[in-house]
Image (cartoon, rainbow, N blue to C red; front, side, top):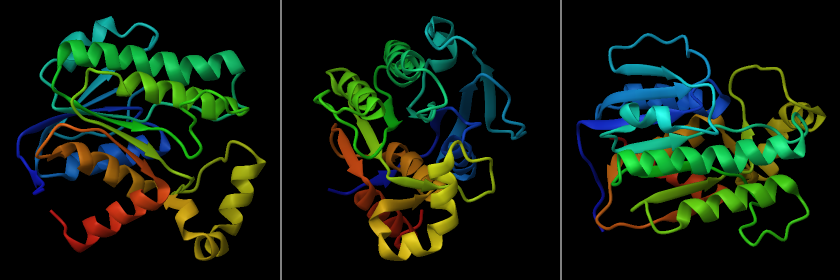
Length: 235
């Protein structure tokens, strides 16, 4: 199947002030096939660009007010999320599942043919049997997105996402992984993905026109392969 990139794409980025979302925004703005980028989030990105429209939205439990901004969109890259341990279990489910489902509902109503790129996580469990809350909730969100509706849904399940730029790590595990990353990357290459490369893959897959409607789940190894292919065959 031949995959090409059509020009004049209109793309929405949700969570563009986060680690992956910020790179997704930069990639979309630099992409010559993207005509317009709409960033939706609770705070400004701090970026000024002629292709960029910013929409501030505080309550993702109700995205009805976003209908005008989401009308006529070709795709969305959804990177909104939080870390386990930084919020209560109830808040984790609300952010991971409810916010995703509500945004997807309004996007589909406003742009029924839009493609959807979703930042999930390694170990996401669509069966709901995992003892890990993050895995259960990501799996629940995946199931909702894959129900009949969107013609193309792309679910990304990265393992450890390496933050390219220095930041305050959310917990000890992330501080440790960042410290040992050079060795970890060599020993377990398919368990890591740099944030900028993950974002590039998430944008590219929805910008390119597929020959048929379909949905895909990409594990970390497949995401790395996608990035390598992009480097070998740039736009």
